[in-house]
Amino acid sequence: MVVVVESKQLAFRYLTYINMLSRLDRQGVSVISSHNLSAICKVGASQLRKDLMPIPGASGKQSVGYSVKSLLVSLQHMMHRDQNDEVILVGVGSFGAALIKYRGFEANGFKIIAAFDLHPTIIENSEVTVYGMDALESFLCGHEVKFAILAVPESAAKNVADQLVRLGINRLLNLTPALLNVPDPVKVSNVNLVYEMEYLRRQS
Amino acid sequence: MVVVVESKQLAFRYLTYINMLSRLDRQGVSVISSHNLSAICKVGASQLRKDLMPIPGASGKQSVGYSVKSLLVSLQHMMHRDQNDEVILVGVGSFGAALIKYRGFEANGFKIIAAFDLHPTIIENSEVTVYGMDALESFLCGHEVKFAILAVPESAAKNVADQLVRLGINRLLNLTPALLNVPDPVKVSNVNLVYEMEYLRRQS
DNA sequence: GAGTGTGAACGTCTTCACAGCT
DNA sequence: AGCTGTGAAGACGTTCACACTC
Image 1 (cartoon, rainbow over the protein chains, first blue to last red):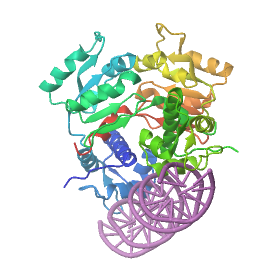
Image 2 (cartoon, rainbow over the protein chains, first blue to last red):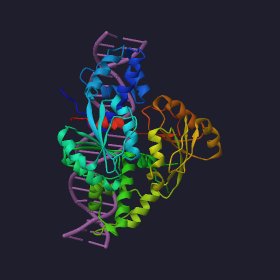
Image 3 (cartoon, each protein chain N blue to C red):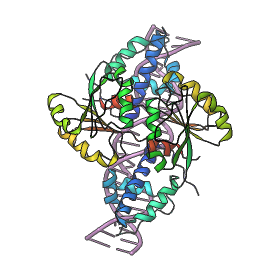
Image 4 (spheres, chains in turn cyan, red, purple, orange):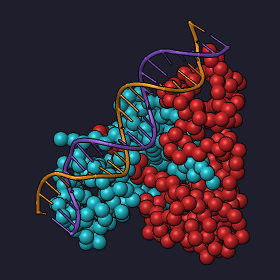
């Protein structure tokens, strides 16, 4: 029985629950009520309970609360936190280089195994090799990678994305402002920091 | 008559319309139908028309379409694209340094006027000065800045955010995984690349 | 009493369908 | 005929209220 979370907002709430629960677990808290956990996660208590309802194995005890550990395990399993995935990075400008140095991906089950750029450079203090773009095809033919992070200039985004999809990538984190056109099973997440800033301008 | 867009999804659609319209404008297209524009922006045609309905000055001609230029101007005005804002950056790790080098903010009306870090470094090819954290207070007392980008380590996020809010910042782009607690008029946008990656894992 | 589980109400966002204008 | 503007319907997400359990 597998639950698939399609809504992004809901998925992000689940991930927040996971992070807060694992912090509570490290702090030695073993039981927590929906009221308390929801306050920590900044959501409503009934929403938290509604969110947990469809999850297999995530049930609490009345007048007690939820077991931190078992709730954590159920959520982690549902969100595939027990999974490890290999990722390639395409585009190693200052942004891409920062992603290579960032430890947060690996800490959460995403390992950048290779990077590609028109102008390969060596990234200090890192095991990740930066290859030329011409090496992309042969690399992906030899490795079963599903995830790619797209950090190329906007003008190159569409072509590179098409190429990645053709070579078998079907999960794409798009850090460019370009709107990508991908065939059906491929999923894209767009992150646009300028949009985020502009959104903050409302009624300022 | 000022329209405030509270929904993030809607705001992002407006920003997409703006970007696509300005590209069409540069290409010399002067009129476009909701059907064609919606295809470019990857939304439904009736949704596009619904989105445009409440906007003062954004009306199309039946059997013709919308004037690219006037629609663009109306949207830009509503989304404050004709506005310039000064921004400070707090936390100059590899990520923060990449943001300083990134040209996209300035191109869209956000100018990073100063950066702060525990360990100030000099960023090459950049006019942005990196100050020590102790310079934050005096700097903000001398400048009327409302926007800050938070790119510090997670463990420092809460304290730094509190300090920024106390010093008058009320728009915060939070690039850390920490959940910030801010008083009422302050707005926060959270960007979490790990969450985005994890969201891509659904049914993979 | 304290806290979960859940149906029902409520609100918001999206899609449909079509009237009306050019 | 072609396209906009919009009410109505539908889908989705959130909040409320309370029965039930420990």
